[in-house]
Amino acid sequence: MKPRRHRIAVLLAALAAPIAAADGLRVATWNISLYAGGRNAAIQTAVYGQFEGRSMAPDVIMLQEMTSAAALQQIVTILNTAPGSPGDWASGPFIDGPDSDNGFVYRTSKVEFLGAVVVAHGGAAPNHPRDLDRYDARLIGYSSDEGLISFYSSHMKAGSASDDQQRRLLECQEIRADAAALSPPRHFILGGDFNTQSSQQASYIELTGLQSDNTGRLLDPISTPGAWNNNGSFRFVHTQDPVGAGGMDDRHDQVLIAYTLADGEGVDYIGNPAIPYSTEAWDDANHSYRSWGNDGTSFNLTLTTDGNTMVGAAIAEALKTVCAGAGHLPVFLDLRVPAKATADTLLDFGTINVGDEASLVLHAGNAGDVALWGPAGIGELLYALDAPAPFATDAGPFADDAGGQLNEHTVTLDTSTPGEFEATLLLVSNDPDAPSLPVTLHANVVGACLPDWNTDGTVNTLDFLAYLNSWTAQDPSADLNGDGAVNTLDFLEFLTAWAAGC
Image (cartoon, rainbow, N blue to C red; front, side, top):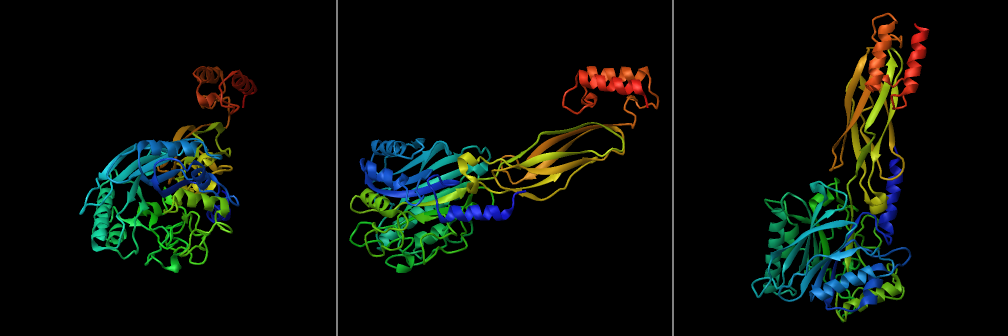
């Protein structure tokens, strides 16, 4: 079993310095400033540019302020043709509503798009001004409900007047109600431009507060409540405005997650939601959450370019260009995907004499797709083993990280009683797709005298004929040399033993 300290080191490294191909699923939200096309090079640099090994490189983006289906398709083309891009981007459908619209783009190697739903239509007051859209997807390689995630994209009403806040509250009520009604119960994420100045506003309390039914409740994964507007204590999580006259002084853009994404099981946030985001540094090792481009030096100023310690000058300049005069930084976080259990499907002990020692090694562990999700992006496999008599093994529990060699477990056989035995060992784990894996166990325990095939105490022609019947029928017990095949070599081995007698 691989040491746990190795896993801790891998996770801390992944959190401290996200790389071009992030471990797990990287989910971003981006108000892309009334996008009608263009800004190609700036978008490509903002998304796939690298600085000190770091890159935004998301797998899913919830977009706001899209203006047309053509613009959404251009985003896909820009992402697919960017230097360093995997070239596997696609989009959900463009849904044309009042005002600007949401969009959803994703990597087809990471998620399967299942469909889009207009949760609530926008319109004139007292309604919220824009549509609220939900995009449903499934993690590639996962078949159970644990692999389902619903992504809500929202651009809420701006302003601090009571009317503005009421319109935001209405949208948040609709988000929470829809999330609570998802069937089957599934993970959900809200990303967008909330236009909210404080966690004490009614809309934000609606999203995150306790209610009689908390099924649709959302969690701030960086545990950073407060009055965000024009407050330097939150300078590392501000997202707006990188180029405007007011400078960086608002946490308008956020990603909130379902509590099921912070329960330590299955799909889960890479980070510790119990610990507030650092107020001293942007590279908080307790969180994968980032306001991309904000190194904390731009409070009440335009975004720092030269000397930007998070993204460097080129990416910072690109982020400002994408804003087109007034706009927002993207925000992202990483999710860990579930472990995948694997084990040998058959352990065949062959034919063993009564009283002989008998054991085989079972290989079992985490078969998560490291090439797709990265070693730190796959959950730890936790499992136990249950072997019925006359077979036995250590029950566990055991743990295994994805990548590297599988764990080895010794399975023994009690040979005190002759007979042919077949049983099923169960590997019970936290793999949501295969919570119980069966391993077939087989053995044939014979009397101490091998040629006495019919175990009547005498070696004679009847034993020869009995073995011949087993051999002809390809009975596994006739595999005397234990090579997994019943063939001439086994027949010759029996013939030699039969001629020698006991």
